[in-house]
Image (cartoon, rainbow, N blue to C red):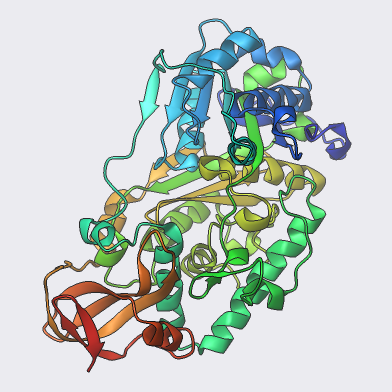
Length: 508
């Protein structure tokens, strides 16, 4: 296991910040990541133990192990694990009496967890809070391959004090019926739609994906917290081959999130007055300035503009306006990076220059994508980076679903001129995002709005298409035909005319 950020990242001494700052200002005082590798699963820790370790290291990083016994909130982001109330176990282990526990289920933005934790501090409901998450899917896979049961702490009973749950499904019924059930399939469709919208050739698109993910790989090689630090060239990343099979065109294995990891992360937040009372080193503080989320959910097939993410445009604009900095004035970015489409959409919607580096972790392919916990890993690395570059500002984004919900968090080196903000652009996005109804039984002549070539034997297999019919209706089809699949990986199919039948489609 890796230790926390340590004291080596302490920035040069500064004059004490003005005591006139609101004492309820939330401040991030400690952060730590844990990564564990090994061939023997019996030597690997379960998720709960990884989370416990990351919390202890975060307290060490803050300079006060006593912080853990003073926790009044433990926020845990749900993972593959089945613990009923992990915060309760952690609270007991840390000696935190009467701690309130919260579980954020899958589908809740991690930025929302940060926003709520900070808002509770501002309101006086909380003084010391831990946000934690962890996964040990690699460990579980190793036990299963050995034909052994996976040993885990049993906690089937118990209820968190609060559970955050999403309010609707992220996929439509027709998408599920046709087998478009994996994120790889849907994100590749988004990427292909963006390519066609911008008039890119297939080769130029391939080169952009290689450059983008090649830069992520370079970062991961230098990041000791990264799960996969093997150097790869852009060409190796985008070229199918042994160990890098094509999953859903244009995504090879080296272009998608890797969730078979053993990783955990934790951050500790305090009110400024509490942090000062504990005598913590203010030169190491990082300040959450604004968190802006969009919770308006539209399934992929219902989005009129399949390449767009209006929620990111609105959330980014609101966050940057509030802190008074343009994207060009943000020193460090960590864009949520489950697939290239997510990053490419964020760059365009938020006005991030395409030549800017947008990761400090190496992203979810190389840094590691522990399901519902990657953003915590991102916060940890952002804290480390901002401490190493005094006076800098950082932005960490979050995604839920198929770029279905979006979150933007901006961090600064000192308290903002305005109070901490947790805001939502849900209604604005609801008003602005154009939608289309989808009819599964619709037939007739139309054109392909987007597509992918899926090689998944357990989901949609073949050319999966969203089709806009000439009469204004929209439908979807999957054609499992080798000739179509070959064509879809060598020629642009977006915009091609097709005749949609009850059970498939043919070229018009």
